[in-house]
Image (cartoon, rainbow, N blue to C red; front, top):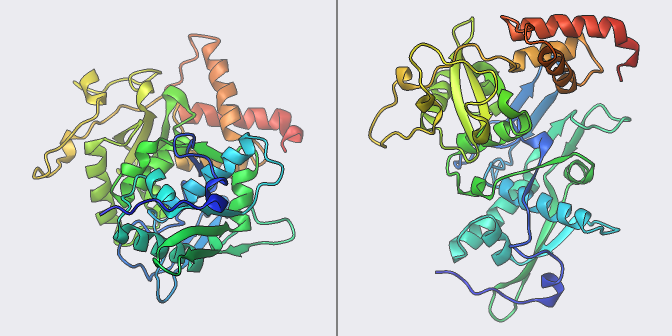
Length: 379
């Protein structure tokens, strides 16, 4: 049974209406393992290190509440959206403390508003407050690492007579606040994201949104082993691979299509494309694969996925794998890989005969020469 919304002028004049709110997600949290992908209580810490760029993330759960989940992160998406709305409206002082009605937050993130939902909201806030993150992402210059919880504190104003909430406040961490309010720190997300029920599906959407969202018809490619490392998922790689292949077969993420092809080591390479870019660009179909293969597929719940049914692409031109991106950043520091890729693509487009058999190898050679000629201009 849904609860009626409690009116409190002190809280209701503070935030934009649900209809006005455009959802934003903090970019740094979208591709690395900051959250548990399971609703069950996670007590195993996350320990992630990228050997190529030295980025690391460790997440410590609380002994009583466990680790903040990717569903708890909906609250952070809401908070980021509210902060961005204030920034876009020209607010002079954007606070870290947000005051709101729990009914409004639950409705905004597509949750029900019954007593159970209010209790789950409080549990989520507690996990966000007690989960401890340590990382060197955006650490201040005087620090090598930064340690924080997602929210510094939260409070609930309870009506003395009805024992119902008159309003909540939460204070986001400084690390999260700076990541949201700095220029280019957020990306818009589809409100349909909140209807995604699976943890892996939610995380895959966020990875696709960050990397494939602005890459047009070229999309983004990442190997299954690298994806597993970045997810922080519990369990074995074999299980993760099996579950991810099922997700690719369903291919029903909002706004993005997922395909696979094989890398030289035999592991699947996942290619992510915006749905409005599917069938465009320089993709070539393999064997008897028809255009129908690029449309979303659905599998009856009782039907087990077959690997041979998954869409398999021939080598995709103008797509860089995560492994290649990491290699470029390591060997050519100071350059924006995606800006260089855009320049390289323009160079290819200037001459129809410039059609490399191996796009990534050709791009690597071009970057090496470009770096040698312009290395003093690298930031």
